[in-house]
Amino acid sequence: MIFPEKPVIWVNPQSISLHALPPGGYFAQQMQRHNPFDGVTTAPLGALWRRRLVYGGRWDLATMPVDQLRQCRWMQDLARQGSDFRSSKWYRKARSAIERDGSYCHKTHCARTCPELDTLFETEFLPLLESMRTTGYRVIPGDWPLGVIDRHGRVLKSEKGRHRFAAARVVGLDRFPLSISAIHRIWAGGDRGNTLLARVLDLGIEAR
Image (cartoon, one colour):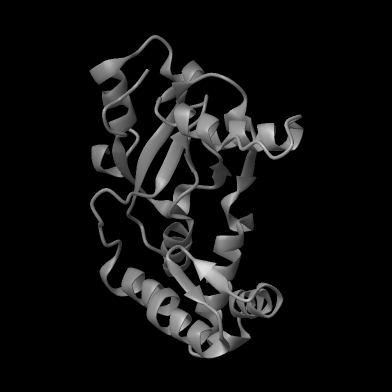
């Protein structure tokens, strides 16, 4: 089933306890582990899967607690350190990456020296926490964090937007958007189209 756009719902990030890769990411991960064709990328296959919305399979069972996500652990520690961000686990890992690999990159930002890394923390990561704390989530059209719905109808965090999600949890935000990128076929049942869309929207806090 292919939707022209993935539905977006607003959730309380404090109530999201599990993370799962969407089927495309889960499928690509399994293929990379068992890929007999050395050097052949599975990325195009994962991208093809992401065009759909309803999937069967076991992808929703491969979960982990969101508090164990690296992004959540590092963001929580960064909030604790505050202006002493150079003592945070995140900063130390990033500095080690610079020493080992020559750079540390986050999205489109790359730091190749410690002063550049300082700037990255001072202009990106710390302001993200402060912005979430003072004004809540800032909507960027077309750039939604992703979530999935498992076979039990639970909303799980998924790839993309994990740093923003972590910041929202750390500061106690109670309203956060997720673009639903996958729905398990068992929960969807025989529903399709607007009927299924209405059920998805009912999972958001604005429907309560």
